[in-house]
Length: 81
Image 1 (cartoon, one colour):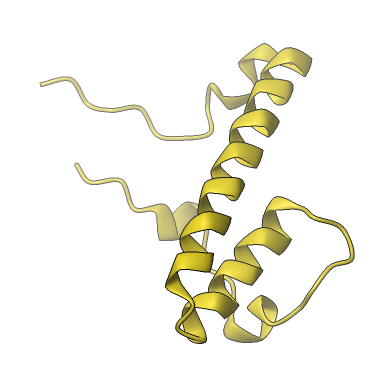
Image 2 (cartoon, one colour; image 1 turned 135 degrees about the vertical axis):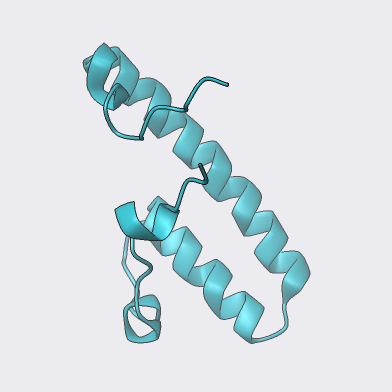
């Protein structure tokens, strides 16, 4: 059974991706990546994706500190074969 991420997290519109924020958040970093890719700046986009992954991992670690079982029911369980 394949996991369909679009059902749980539908993608944002192009208009939403054109917004900008004053703070350096994960969402802002991903919007900048989107703009870089549209402009053909792939090396800049790759670097910003690495930054976004680092930010996401730090956020995940902090959320687990605050509430350990927070993600227990977030994703569907895998079927055992």
